[in-house]
Picture 1 (spheres, rainbow, N blue to C red):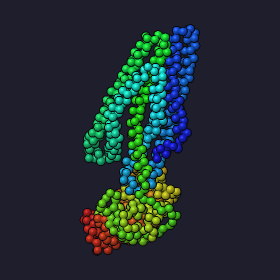
Picture 2: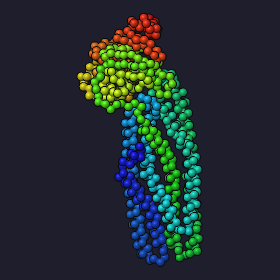
Picture 3: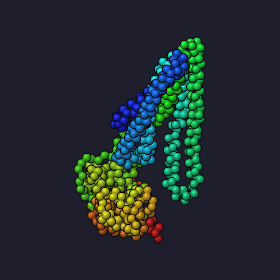
Picture 4: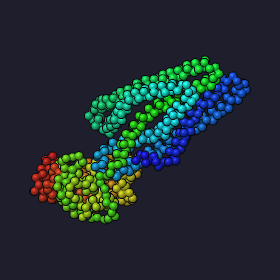
Length: 578
């Protein structure tokens, strides 16, 4: 997927490669002019005027080539940067679109935090890899091969100096990279761990402060930070020995080259000019060869880390959504709900959460679902808007199998207000329009009045344009729940599911919400999941769940006579109220 994204930008690739050739070619060409200039200076057969002419001639050519190399380097950097940024933007956009197509099952498989890391850190690694490949990596073979060939052509008798230096540098590079490799591999895991600790600490700041856990949090963070520090220190020690080793090898090669050149000059005084001119070029080529090998070794680490990130990105992109919708026209369905021998187990969970559930809900009914914690109430509710598919059995909406209904039909037919009120940063209006994108001010006001949210929204100076901070932190739990209910009812759905979404409301506000729902949404099928029986006591029908099974259904008075589980819940809550 990443390589396909790169392939889109052929002109940038060609530009980057062309500028790389110009930049590397200029670097390889410059020592030849330096050789000619030095040869002219040491050529006793030339007059002073002729020497100046040659020096000026080659000096101007040297400046032109150097300037061309500078322009090539600048344009190469621009092209590589634009290519890297474009590829990263495309990959990030496609990953986000892909994640939006995932079902709950896919997201739970990867974990939300892991997906965020893949979209940010892994994409950044790919961006850096593309940048380094087209800015540095492509230059390495040109400098290495060109440097070896030109150095040998410059001073053929010293070919062995080049080979020995290359072998020694490769050995030091291999040993250094081998020593640093495990530390680089540990970096990402430790960074993930440190980020997770910091994120949890900041999100759970109230819990940390309430239970005086600052010291424990500091200890946990310090442990991870110290481990990362140890790996960084080990890499630093390796670098501190690697660079001096390279310097020593290169300086030794230069010393050997100069020593042998001096012997050549002594033996053949006639060749002194060319030999002395060639030594400077030879030394520069040695430096370019060393630079190419060092950069090649460094690039191997970038490449290895980059390909790990590419594999992680491709894993996301190659994952098919666990749930697919039929490509059928949208339609209008009535608000009936039928479960036909439905069972459900979460992925990687051997024990089913729901076991052989069957019931029928008529359009316009108010249904209550009660049961102990962990009985499967929320799971049952999430099957209705098809957040999950049942493991066995069939769910029908408006008489149609849920798997044969289009996504658009499902969206306009069902609204679910989840147990945890989740708001997004922006404005109140922006959050409410997530329920209906084209909702008018009148529709927002009506929905807010039903959810009893107008009571506090109208008191805000900006009313519906008031700012909502991240996760709705500037509103209380009850206010967030009422805004979530507003978002759920704003499109006047055929089926409305309230998953324990009034738990933070006081008894009066809850009663007002239910009264408004009965009055203003009388044709809407309302399914209320609640911990408190008082929240569903007036429902047309109440479903009682116990350990994933439907153990009773009927009105409040019927269940008090026929269902022991309901009787126990009622008596317990009644005793607590007394």
